[in-house]
Amino acid sequence: MKEHSNFIKTIMAADLESGKHTKIITRFPPEPNGYLHIGHARALTINFELAKVFGGTTYLRFDDTNPEQEDIKYVNSIIEDIHWLGFVPEKIFYASDYFQEMYQRAILLIQRGLAYVDDQTAEEISLTRGSLTEPGKHSPYRNRSVEENLTLFDNMKKGLYKVGEKVLRAKIDMASPNMNMRDPVIYRISYEPHYRTGSEWCIYPLYDYAHPLEDAIEGITHSLCSLEFEDHRPLYDWVVKETQMPNVPRQIEFGRLNIENTVMSKRYLRQLVEREKVTGWDDPRMPTLSGLRRRGYSPEAIKEFILATGLSKNNSTVSREMLEAYLRDDLQTKTAKIMAVIKPLKVTVTNYPEGEVEKIQTLLDPQDESKGFKTLYFSRHLYIDRDDFLVEKPNKRWKRLSKGLEVRLFNAYFIHCHEVVYDQKGEVKEILVTYDKETKSGTGFTARRPNGTISYVEATTALKVRFNLFGPLVFDGEEPFLERLNPNSWLVEEGFVEKAFEGIKEAVQLMRIGYFIQDNKTEKRVLNRIVELRSSYK
Image (cartoon, rainbow, N blue to C red; front, side):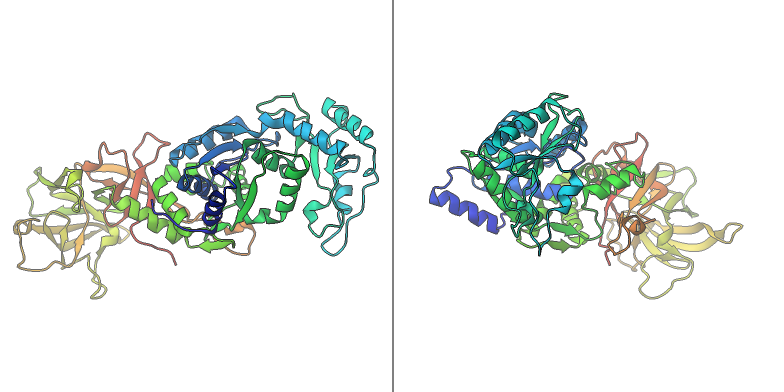
Protein backbone atom coordinates (compact mmCIF):
# COMPACT_ATOMS: atom_id res chain seq x y z
CA MET A 1 0.00 0.00 0.00
CA LYS A 2 1.40 3.39 -1.03
CA GLU A 3 2.44 5.96 1.57
CA HIS A 4 0.69 9.32 1.43
CA SER A 5 1.76 12.49 3.22
CA ASN A 6 -0.71 14.63 5.18
CA PHE A 7 -0.82 17.26 7.90
CA ILE A 8 -1.68 14.79 10.69
CA LYS A 9 1.33 12.65 9.86
CA THR A 10 3.48 15.79 10.11
CA ILE A 11 2.04 16.57 13.57
CA MET A 12 2.66 13.03 14.79
CA ALA A 13 6.23 13.03 13.54
CA ALA A 14 6.92 16.35 15.30
CA ASP A 15 5.41 15.05 18.57
CA LEU A 16 7.68 12.01 18.48
CA GLU A 17 10.74 14.05 17.58
CA SER A 18 10.14 16.55 20.40
CA GLY A 19 9.72 13.79 22.95
CA LYS A 20 6.13 14.76 23.73
CA HIS A 21 5.20 11.17 22.99
CA THR A 22 7.25 8.01 22.73
CA LYS A 23 4.49 6.04 21.01
CA ILE A 24 1.51 7.01 18.85
CA ILE A 25 -1.81 5.65 20.12
CA THR A 26 -5.00 6.23 18.09
CA ARG A 27 -8.51 4.81 18.39
CA PHE A 28 -11.53 4.07 16.26
CA PRO A 29 -14.59 4.88 18.42
CA PRO A 30 -17.88 3.89 16.72
CA GLU A 31 -21.19 4.03 18.52
CA PRO A 32 -22.83 0.57 18.22
CA ASN A 33 -26.16 1.91 16.96
CA GLY A 34 -25.88 0.94 13.29
CA TYR A 35 -23.68 -0.58 10.62
CA LEU A 36 -20.41 0.90 9.40
CA HIS A 37 -20.46 2.63 6.01
CA ILE A 38 -17.66 3.79 3.74
CA GLY A 39 -17.38 7.08 5.64
CA HIS A 40 -16.57 5.10 8.77
CA ALA A 41 -14.10 3.08 6.72
CA ARG A 42 -12.23 6.29 6.02
CA ALA A 43 -11.92 7.18 9.71
CA LEU A 44 -11.00 3.58 10.47
CA THR A 45 -8.29 3.44 7.80
CA ILE A 46 -6.85 6.83 8.78
CA ASN A 47 -6.48 5.83 12.43
CA PHE A 48 -4.95 2.43 11.76
CA GLU A 49 -2.67 3.45 8.91
CA LEU A 50 -1.28 6.56 10.63
CA ALA A 51 -0.46 4.64 13.80
CA LYS A 52 1.12 1.90 11.68
CA VAL A 53 3.45 4.39 9.95
CA PHE A 54 5.05 5.20 13.30
CA GLY A 55 4.95 1.70 14.77
CA GLY A 56 2.10 2.76 17.03
CA THR A 57 -1.11 1.22 18.28
CA THR A 58 -4.80 1.55 17.45
CA TYR A 59 -7.63 0.57 19.79
CA LEU A 60 -11.23 -0.20 18.95
CA ARG A 61 -13.58 1.45 21.41
CA PHE A 62 -17.35 1.15 21.43
CA ASP A 63 -18.75 4.52 22.45
CA ASP A 64 -21.80 2.95 24.10
CA THR A 65 -23.24 5.67 26.34
CA ASN A 66 -26.68 5.82 24.70
CA PRO A 67 -28.70 2.74 25.77
CA GLU A 68 -31.81 3.65 23.76
CA GLN A 69 -30.18 2.92 20.40
CA GLU A 70 -27.32 0.48 20.98
CA ASP A 71 -27.27 -3.28 20.56
CA ILE A 72 -24.82 -6.18 20.64
CA LYS A 73 -25.68 -7.02 17.01
CA TYR A 74 -24.06 -3.74 15.96
CA VAL A 75 -20.98 -4.53 18.04
CA ASN A 76 -20.60 -7.86 16.27
CA SER A 77 -21.13 -6.38 12.81
CA ILE A 78 -18.55 -3.64 13.45
CA ILE A 79 -15.94 -6.16 14.58
CA GLU A 80 -16.65 -8.26 11.48
CA ASP A 81 -16.30 -5.24 9.17
CA ILE A 82 -13.01 -4.16 10.74
CA HIS A 83 -11.51 -7.61 10.35
CA TRP A 84 -12.78 -7.80 6.76
CA LEU A 85 -10.90 -4.59 5.98
CA GLY A 86 -7.77 -6.28 7.30
CA PHE A 87 -7.31 -4.35 10.54
CA VAL A 88 -6.69 -5.91 13.95
CA PRO A 89 -7.15 -3.61 16.97
CA GLU A 90 -4.50 -3.88 19.69
CA LYS A 91 -7.32 -3.95 22.26
CA ILE A 92 -11.11 -3.62 22.31
CA PHE A 93 -12.62 -1.25 24.89
CA TYR A 94 -16.14 -0.16 25.82
CA ALA A 95 -17.08 3.26 27.16
CA SER A 96 -19.53 1.45 29.46
CA ASP A 97 -16.51 -0.01 31.30
CA TYR A 98 -15.72 3.53 32.44
CA PHE A 99 -19.15 4.51 33.83
CA GLN A 100 -17.92 4.43 37.42
CA GLU A 101 -14.85 6.58 36.71
CA MET A 102 -16.90 9.03 34.65
CA TYR A 103 -19.31 9.32 37.57
CA GLN A 104 -16.45 9.95 39.99
CA ARG A 105 -14.99 12.62 37.69
CA ALA A 106 -18.41 14.31 37.58
CA ILE A 107 -18.45 14.37 41.39
CA LEU A 108 -15.00 15.99 41.22
CA LEU A 109 -16.39 18.72 38.96
CA ILE A 110 -19.25 19.34 41.43
CA GLN A 111 -16.80 19.49 44.35
CA ARG A 112 -14.70 22.04 42.45
CA GLY A 113 -17.77 24.17 41.76
CA LEU A 114 -17.66 23.32 38.03
CA ALA A 115 -20.93 21.37 37.66
CA TYR A 116 -24.49 21.71 38.96
CA VAL A 117 -27.81 19.90 38.84
CA ASP A 118 -30.40 21.77 36.79
CA ASP A 119 -34.16 21.27 37.14
CA GLN A 120 -35.02 22.99 33.87
CA THR A 121 -36.52 21.00 31.02
CA ALA A 122 -34.62 20.45 27.80
CA GLU A 123 -36.79 23.06 26.10
CA GLU A 124 -36.14 25.62 28.84
CA ILE A 125 -32.39 25.02 28.66
CA SER A 126 -32.47 25.45 24.89
CA LEU A 127 -34.34 28.77 25.20
CA THR A 128 -31.77 30.16 27.64
CA ARG A 129 -28.65 29.28 25.62
CA GLY A 130 -28.78 32.52 23.66
CA SER A 131 -27.57 32.90 20.09
CA LEU A 132 -24.40 33.65 18.17
CA THR A 133 -25.02 37.37 18.84
CA GLU A 134 -26.59 37.20 22.31
CA PRO A 135 -25.22 35.60 25.51
CA GLY A 136 -27.17 32.88 27.27
CA LYS A 137 -29.02 33.30 30.57
CA HIS A 138 -27.94 31.68 33.80
CA SER A 139 -30.08 28.86 35.09
CA PRO A 140 -31.93 29.72 38.33
CA TYR A 141 -30.29 26.58 39.74
CA ARG A 142 -26.73 27.48 38.70
CA ASN A 143 -25.63 28.67 42.14
CA ARG A 144 -26.75 25.71 44.18
CA SER A 145 -24.27 24.75 46.88
CA VAL A 146 -21.76 21.97 46.36
CA GLU A 147 -23.49 19.92 49.06
CA GLU A 148 -26.92 20.26 47.44
CA ASN A 149 -25.55 19.36 44.02
CA LEU A 150 -23.81 16.29 45.40
CA THR A 151 -27.05 15.14 47.09
CA LEU A 152 -29.16 15.75 43.99
CA PHE A 153 -26.65 14.01 41.69
CA ASP A 154 -26.56 11.03 44.06
CA ASN A 155 -30.36 10.93 43.99
CA MET A 156 -30.25 10.99 40.19
CA LYS A 157 -28.01 7.94 40.32
CA LYS A 158 -30.39 6.23 42.77
CA GLY A 159 -33.29 6.66 40.35
CA LEU A 160 -35.37 9.06 42.46
CA TYR A 161 -36.35 11.31 39.55
CA LYS A 162 -38.23 10.97 36.28
CA VAL A 163 -36.59 11.13 32.87
CA GLY A 164 -35.89 14.78 32.02
CA GLU A 165 -36.65 15.99 35.55
CA LYS A 166 -33.02 16.82 36.28
CA VAL A 167 -29.71 16.95 34.41
CA LEU A 168 -26.12 17.66 35.39
CA ARG A 169 -24.54 20.62 33.58
CA ALA A 170 -20.95 21.81 33.43
CA LYS A 171 -20.52 25.34 34.82
CA ILE A 172 -18.40 27.15 32.27
CA ASP A 173 -19.48 30.41 30.60
CA MET A 174 -22.97 31.32 29.41
CA ALA A 175 -21.51 34.29 27.51
CA SER A 176 -18.92 32.26 25.59
CA PRO A 177 -18.88 32.93 21.83
CA ASN A 178 -18.64 29.13 21.47
CA MET A 179 -22.15 27.78 22.07
CA ASN A 180 -20.73 24.42 23.17
CA MET A 181 -19.20 26.09 26.22
CA ARG A 182 -22.48 27.53 27.51
CA ASP A 183 -22.98 25.17 30.44
CA PRO A 184 -23.46 21.98 28.39
CA VAL A 185 -25.45 19.08 29.81
CA ILE A 186 -23.06 16.29 30.76
CA TYR A 187 -25.39 13.75 32.45
CA ARG A 188 -29.00 12.77 31.82
CA ILE A 189 -31.49 10.28 33.25
CA SER A 190 -32.54 7.17 31.28
CA TYR A 191 -34.21 3.99 32.50
CA GLU A 192 -33.63 2.12 29.24
CA PRO A 193 -31.62 -1.06 30.00
CA HIS A 194 -28.09 -0.96 28.63
CA TYR A 195 -27.06 -3.88 26.41
CA ARG A 196 -23.97 -4.50 28.62
CA THR A 197 -24.70 -3.06 32.07
CA GLY A 198 -28.43 -3.77 32.20
CA SER A 199 -30.19 -1.60 34.81
CA GLU A 200 -27.09 -0.96 36.89
CA TRP A 201 -27.12 2.70 35.82
CA CYS A 202 -29.97 5.11 35.21
CA ILE A 203 -27.78 8.15 34.51
CA TYR A 204 -25.61 8.34 31.41
CA PRO A 205 -22.85 10.74 30.32
CA LEU A 206 -23.34 12.72 27.12
CA TYR A 207 -20.89 12.44 24.25
CA ASP A 208 -19.01 15.72 24.77
CA TYR A 209 -18.26 14.74 28.36
CA ALA A 210 -17.68 11.01 27.89
CA HIS A 211 -15.53 11.06 24.76
CA PRO A 212 -12.57 13.08 26.06
CA LEU A 213 -12.55 11.02 29.25
CA GLU A 214 -12.48 7.80 27.24
CA ASP A 215 -9.50 9.06 25.23
CA ALA A 216 -7.70 10.16 28.39
CA ILE A 217 -8.36 6.91 30.26
CA GLU A 218 -6.93 4.87 27.39
CA GLY A 219 -3.89 7.09 26.91
CA ILE A 220 -4.80 8.12 23.37
CA THR A 221 -2.17 10.53 22.04
CA HIS A 222 -4.01 11.80 18.96
CA SER A 223 -7.80 11.82 18.89
CA LEU A 224 -8.70 12.09 15.20
CA CYS A 225 -12.20 13.18 14.23
CA SER A 226 -14.09 14.88 11.43
CA LEU A 227 -14.36 18.63 10.96
CA GLU A 228 -17.79 19.11 12.60
CA PHE A 229 -16.14 18.49 15.98
CA GLU A 230 -13.75 21.43 15.61
CA ASP A 231 -16.09 23.71 17.61
CA HIS A 232 -16.29 21.02 20.31
CA ARG A 233 -12.52 20.96 20.84
CA PRO A 234 -12.49 23.69 23.58
CA LEU A 235 -15.02 21.63 25.54
CA TYR A 236 -12.98 18.47 24.91
CA ASP A 237 -9.88 20.16 26.36
CA TRP A 238 -11.88 21.66 29.25
CA VAL A 239 -13.23 18.26 30.33
CA VAL A 240 -9.78 16.65 30.29
CA LYS A 241 -8.23 19.54 32.23
CA GLU A 242 -10.95 20.17 34.82
CA THR A 243 -11.50 16.49 35.63
CA GLN A 244 -7.74 16.39 36.28
CA MET A 245 -7.01 13.47 33.96
CA PRO A 246 -3.33 12.43 34.05
CA ASN A 247 -3.19 11.74 30.29
CA VAL A 248 -3.89 14.63 27.93
CA PRO A 249 -4.89 13.58 24.38
CA ARG A 250 -4.85 16.01 21.47
CA GLN A 251 -7.93 16.29 19.27
CA ILE A 252 -7.20 16.86 15.58
CA GLU A 253 -9.95 17.40 13.00
CA PHE A 254 -9.85 16.49 9.33
CA GLY A 255 -12.28 17.26 6.52
CA ARG A 256 -15.08 14.87 5.68
CA LEU A 257 -15.02 13.10 2.34
CA ASN A 258 -18.29 12.86 0.44
CA ILE A 259 -18.86 10.68 -2.62
CA GLU A 260 -21.26 11.84 -5.32
CA ASN A 261 -24.64 10.07 -5.39
CA THR A 262 -23.77 8.18 -2.19
CA VAL A 263 -25.62 8.34 1.13
CA MET A 264 -23.11 9.12 3.90
CA SER A 265 -25.60 9.64 6.75
CA LYS A 266 -26.43 6.89 9.23
CA ARG A 267 -29.79 8.58 9.84
CA TYR A 268 -30.72 8.41 6.16
CA LEU A 269 -29.47 4.83 5.86
CA ARG A 270 -31.61 3.82 8.82
CA GLN A 271 -34.58 5.53 7.14
CA LEU A 272 -34.04 3.45 3.99
CA VAL A 273 -33.99 0.23 6.02
CA GLU A 274 -36.94 1.05 8.28
CA ARG A 275 -39.12 2.18 5.36
CA GLU A 276 -38.12 -0.94 3.40
CA LYS A 277 -36.71 1.05 0.50
CA VAL A 278 -33.85 -1.47 0.56
CA THR A 279 -33.66 -5.15 1.50
CA GLY A 280 -31.59 -4.49 4.63
CA TRP A 281 -28.34 -3.02 5.89
CA ASP A 282 -26.42 -5.37 3.57
CA ASP A 283 -28.41 -4.47 0.46
CA PRO A 284 -25.79 -4.44 -2.36
CA ARG A 285 -26.73 -0.84 -3.23
CA MET A 286 -26.01 0.39 0.29
CA PRO A 287 -22.68 2.10 1.11
CA THR A 288 -22.43 0.05 4.30
CA LEU A 289 -19.39 -2.20 4.48
CA SER A 290 -21.69 -5.22 4.71
CA GLY A 291 -23.49 -4.02 1.55
CA LEU A 292 -20.24 -3.37 -0.30
CA ARG A 293 -18.91 -6.77 0.78
CA ARG A 294 -22.05 -8.51 -0.50
CA ARG A 295 -21.82 -6.61 -3.77
CA GLY A 296 -18.24 -7.79 -4.24
CA TYR A 297 -16.10 -4.78 -3.35
CA SER A 298 -12.63 -5.75 -2.18
CA PRO A 299 -11.15 -4.34 1.04
CA GLU A 300 -7.90 -3.60 -0.79
CA ALA A 301 -9.67 -1.36 -3.31
CA ILE A 302 -11.56 0.50 -0.57
CA LYS A 303 -8.39 1.18 1.41
CA GLU A 304 -6.39 2.29 -1.63
CA PHE A 305 -9.21 4.67 -2.59
CA ILE A 306 -9.34 6.14 0.93
CA LEU A 307 -5.59 6.66 1.10
CA ALA A 308 -5.50 8.18 -2.39
CA THR A 309 -8.10 10.82 -1.46
CA GLY A 310 -5.67 12.16 1.12
CA LEU A 311 -6.34 14.14 4.27
CA SER A 312 -7.34 17.77 4.24
CA LYS A 313 -8.56 20.33 6.76
CA ASN A 314 -11.50 21.05 4.43
CA ASN A 315 -14.51 18.95 3.47
CA SER A 316 -14.40 17.62 -0.09
CA THR A 317 -16.43 15.60 -2.57
CA VAL A 318 -15.17 13.11 -5.13
CA SER A 319 -16.85 11.26 -7.98
CA ARG A 320 -17.96 7.69 -7.35
CA GLU A 321 -15.99 6.89 -10.51
CA MET A 322 -12.77 7.40 -8.49
CA LEU A 323 -13.76 4.60 -6.11
CA GLU A 324 -14.82 2.39 -9.01
CA ALA A 325 -11.52 2.99 -10.81
CA TYR A 326 -9.60 1.59 -7.83
CA LEU A 327 -12.02 -1.31 -7.71
CA ARG A 328 -11.45 -2.14 -11.39
CA ASP A 329 -7.68 -1.95 -10.95
CA ASP A 330 -7.86 -4.43 -8.09
CA LEU A 331 -10.29 -6.85 -9.76
CA GLN A 332 -8.46 -6.79 -13.10
CA THR A 333 -5.51 -8.70 -11.66
CA LYS A 334 -7.53 -11.19 -9.62
CA THR A 335 -10.36 -12.39 -11.82
CA ALA A 336 -10.87 -15.15 -14.35
CA LYS A 337 -12.39 -14.06 -17.67
CA ILE A 338 -15.75 -15.73 -18.34
CA MET A 339 -18.27 -15.27 -21.16
CA ALA A 340 -21.93 -14.51 -20.45
CA VAL A 341 -25.01 -13.17 -22.18
CA ILE A 342 -27.36 -11.01 -20.12
CA LYS A 343 -30.08 -10.64 -22.76
CA PRO A 344 -29.97 -13.93 -24.66
CA LEU A 345 -30.70 -14.14 -28.37
CA LYS A 346 -30.90 -17.63 -29.86
CA VAL A 347 -28.40 -18.40 -32.63
CA THR A 348 -28.56 -21.46 -34.89
CA VAL A 349 -25.42 -22.36 -36.85
CA THR A 350 -27.08 -23.93 -39.88
CA ASN A 351 -23.95 -25.58 -41.29
CA TYR A 352 -22.80 -27.18 -38.02
CA PRO A 353 -23.85 -30.81 -37.35
CA GLU A 354 -26.84 -31.32 -35.05
CA GLY A 355 -25.94 -33.03 -31.77
CA GLU A 356 -22.20 -32.41 -32.01
CA VAL A 357 -20.50 -30.31 -29.29
CA GLU A 358 -16.91 -29.17 -29.84
CA LYS A 359 -14.50 -28.54 -26.95
CA ILE A 360 -11.96 -25.74 -27.21
CA GLN A 361 -9.18 -25.29 -24.65
CA THR A 362 -8.33 -21.68 -23.80
CA LEU A 363 -6.85 -19.62 -20.96
CA LEU A 364 -9.02 -18.42 -18.09
CA ASP A 365 -7.18 -15.12 -18.41
CA PRO A 366 -5.37 -14.34 -21.70
CA GLN A 367 -3.01 -12.01 -19.78
CA ASP A 368 -2.16 -14.47 -16.99
CA GLU A 369 -1.35 -18.11 -17.76
CA SER A 370 -1.02 -18.88 -14.03
CA LYS A 371 -4.81 -18.85 -13.67
CA GLY A 372 -4.96 -21.99 -15.80
CA PHE A 373 -7.22 -23.15 -18.60
CA LYS A 374 -10.92 -23.57 -19.23
CA THR A 375 -12.95 -25.60 -21.69
CA LEU A 376 -15.02 -23.62 -24.15
CA TYR A 377 -17.90 -25.26 -26.01
CA PHE A 378 -19.23 -24.72 -29.54
CA SER A 379 -22.18 -26.33 -31.29
CA ARG A 380 -25.10 -25.71 -33.64
CA HIS A 381 -27.04 -23.91 -30.88
CA LEU A 382 -25.64 -20.80 -29.24
CA TYR A 383 -26.70 -17.62 -27.46
CA ILE A 384 -25.36 -14.13 -28.03
CA ASP A 385 -26.44 -10.92 -26.33
CA ARG A 386 -29.31 -9.01 -27.99
CA ASP A 387 -27.28 -5.81 -27.67
CA ASP A 388 -24.68 -7.34 -30.01
CA PHE A 389 -27.12 -7.70 -32.90
CA LEU A 390 -28.99 -5.27 -35.12
CA VAL A 391 -30.93 -6.35 -38.18
CA GLU A 392 -29.45 -3.52 -40.24
CA LYS A 393 -25.97 -2.09 -39.67
CA PRO A 394 -26.57 1.47 -38.37
CA ASN A 395 -23.20 3.07 -39.32
CA LYS A 396 -19.52 2.40 -39.91
CA ARG A 397 -18.77 2.44 -36.19
CA TRP A 398 -21.01 -0.55 -35.51
CA LYS A 399 -18.53 -3.36 -34.78
CA ARG A 400 -20.90 -6.17 -33.93
CA LEU A 401 -23.28 -8.47 -35.78
CA SER A 402 -25.93 -7.51 -38.34
CA LYS A 403 -27.66 -9.36 -41.14
CA GLY A 404 -25.17 -9.86 -43.95
CA LEU A 405 -22.16 -9.22 -41.69
CA GLU A 406 -19.53 -11.48 -40.22
CA VAL A 407 -18.06 -11.36 -36.67
CA ARG A 408 -15.70 -13.50 -34.66
CA LEU A 409 -16.96 -15.34 -31.60
CA PHE A 410 -14.38 -15.07 -28.80
CA ASN A 411 -11.85 -17.92 -29.01
CA ALA A 412 -13.97 -19.73 -31.61
CA TYR A 413 -14.99 -19.08 -35.23
CA PHE A 414 -16.26 -16.43 -37.63
CA ILE A 415 -20.03 -16.51 -38.04
CA HIS A 416 -22.08 -14.86 -40.82
CA CYS A 417 -25.75 -13.94 -40.32
CA HIS A 418 -27.89 -14.83 -43.32
CA GLU A 419 -31.44 -14.91 -41.94
CA VAL A 420 -33.52 -13.40 -39.12
CA VAL A 421 -36.55 -15.16 -37.58
CA TYR A 422 -39.30 -12.99 -36.06
CA ASP A 423 -42.00 -13.80 -33.52
CA GLN A 424 -45.71 -12.88 -33.82
CA LYS A 425 -45.01 -9.42 -32.40
CA GLY A 426 -42.44 -8.71 -35.08
CA GLU A 427 -39.51 -8.91 -32.69
CA VAL A 428 -36.32 -10.83 -33.44
CA LYS A 429 -36.73 -14.36 -32.07
CA GLU A 430 -33.70 -16.12 -33.55
CA ILE A 431 -30.94 -15.57 -36.05
CA LEU A 432 -29.55 -18.11 -38.49
CA VAL A 433 -25.83 -18.04 -39.21
CA THR A 434 -23.11 -20.06 -40.85
CA TYR A 435 -19.63 -20.60 -39.46
CA ASP A 436 -16.30 -20.91 -41.28
CA LYS A 437 -14.29 -23.83 -39.86
CA GLU A 438 -11.09 -22.35 -41.33
CA THR A 439 -11.29 -19.34 -39.01
CA LYS A 440 -10.82 -21.10 -35.67
CA SER A 441 -8.95 -18.96 -33.14
CA GLY A 442 -5.26 -19.76 -32.93
CA THR A 443 -4.93 -20.94 -36.53
CA GLY A 444 -3.56 -17.63 -37.74
CA PHE A 445 -6.38 -17.03 -40.24
CA THR A 446 -5.96 -13.54 -41.79
CA ALA A 447 -7.64 -13.82 -45.20
CA ARG A 448 -10.41 -11.39 -44.17
CA ARG A 449 -11.27 -9.19 -41.23
CA PRO A 450 -14.51 -9.68 -39.23
CA ASN A 451 -16.79 -6.80 -38.20
CA GLY A 452 -15.74 -7.07 -34.55
CA THR A 453 -15.58 -9.78 -31.89
CA ILE A 454 -18.47 -10.70 -29.59
CA SER A 455 -19.16 -13.04 -26.67
CA TYR A 456 -21.35 -16.13 -26.81
CA VAL A 457 -22.30 -19.21 -24.82
CA GLU A 458 -23.02 -22.69 -26.13
CA ALA A 459 -26.70 -23.45 -25.46
CA THR A 460 -26.60 -27.07 -24.21
CA THR A 461 -23.83 -26.49 -21.63
CA ALA A 462 -24.71 -22.92 -20.59
CA LEU A 463 -25.61 -22.23 -16.96
CA LYS A 464 -28.78 -20.25 -16.35
CA VAL A 465 -28.16 -17.18 -14.18
CA ARG A 466 -30.01 -14.21 -12.73
CA PHE A 467 -28.02 -11.00 -13.05
CA ASN A 468 -28.47 -8.17 -10.55
CA LEU A 469 -27.46 -4.88 -12.16
CA PHE A 470 -27.00 -1.95 -9.76
CA GLY A 471 -26.99 1.78 -10.28
CA PRO A 472 -26.79 4.68 -7.79
CA LEU A 473 -29.29 4.21 -4.96
CA VAL A 474 -29.83 7.96 -4.63
CA PHE A 475 -29.01 11.04 -6.68
CA ASP A 476 -27.59 14.27 -5.30
CA GLY A 477 -29.94 17.24 -5.33
CA GLU A 478 -31.99 19.72 -3.33
CA GLU A 479 -35.21 17.67 -3.29
CA PRO A 480 -36.31 15.78 -0.14
CA PHE A 481 -34.22 12.67 0.40
CA LEU A 482 -36.80 10.03 -0.51
CA GLU A 483 -37.69 11.90 -3.71
CA ARG A 484 -34.09 11.49 -4.90
CA LEU A 485 -34.15 7.69 -4.83
CA ASN A 486 -33.27 6.09 -8.15
CA PRO A 487 -36.17 3.86 -9.33
CA ASN A 488 -33.74 1.94 -11.58
CA SER A 489 -31.08 1.29 -8.95
CA TRP A 490 -31.66 -2.50 -9.09
CA LEU A 491 -32.46 -4.16 -12.43
CA VAL A 492 -32.71 -7.92 -12.95
CA GLU A 493 -31.96 -9.86 -16.13
CA GLU A 494 -32.18 -13.60 -16.84
CA GLY A 495 -29.37 -14.98 -18.96
CA PHE A 496 -26.54 -17.48 -19.19
CA VAL A 497 -22.87 -17.91 -18.34
CA GLU A 498 -20.53 -20.43 -19.92
CA LYS A 499 -19.99 -23.74 -18.16
CA ALA A 500 -16.48 -22.74 -17.05
CA PHE A 501 -18.09 -20.59 -14.36
CA GLU A 502 -19.29 -23.71 -12.56
CA GLY A 503 -17.52 -24.05 -9.22
CA ILE A 504 -16.02 -20.54 -9.19
CA LYS A 505 -16.89 -18.76 -5.91
CA GLU A 506 -14.83 -15.61 -6.20
CA ALA A 507 -15.36 -12.55 -8.39
CA VAL A 508 -15.08 -12.96 -12.17
CA GLN A 509 -14.87 -10.66 -15.15
CA LEU A 510 -17.76 -11.31 -17.50
CA MET A 511 -16.12 -10.30 -20.74
CA ARG A 512 -17.32 -6.99 -22.20
CA ILE A 513 -19.96 -6.71 -19.42
CA GLY A 514 -18.38 -6.12 -16.02
CA TYR A 515 -17.17 -7.71 -12.81
CA PHE A 516 -19.61 -10.01 -11.02
CA ILE A 517 -19.76 -12.22 -7.93
CA GLN A 518 -22.17 -14.82 -6.61
CA ASP A 519 -24.66 -13.24 -4.19
CA ASN A 520 -23.98 -14.65 -0.73
CA LYS A 521 -27.63 -14.43 0.40
CA THR A 522 -28.96 -17.10 -1.95
CA GLU A 523 -28.05 -20.66 -2.89
CA LYS A 524 -29.36 -20.12 -6.41
CA ARG A 525 -27.09 -18.93 -9.20
CA VAL A 526 -27.48 -15.17 -8.75
CA LEU A 527 -24.69 -12.81 -9.79
CA ASN A 528 -24.28 -9.28 -8.47
CA ARG A 529 -22.59 -6.80 -10.76
CA ILE A 530 -19.75 -5.29 -8.74
CA VAL A 531 -18.82 -2.65 -11.29
CA GLU A 532 -18.97 -2.15 -15.04
CA LEU A 533 -15.83 -2.65 -17.13
CA ARG A 534 -15.76 1.03 -18.02
CA SER A 535 -17.18 4.07 -16.38
CA SER A 536 -20.77 4.92 -17.18
CA TYR A 537 -20.54 8.03 -14.98
CA LYS A 538 -21.88 11.23 -16.48
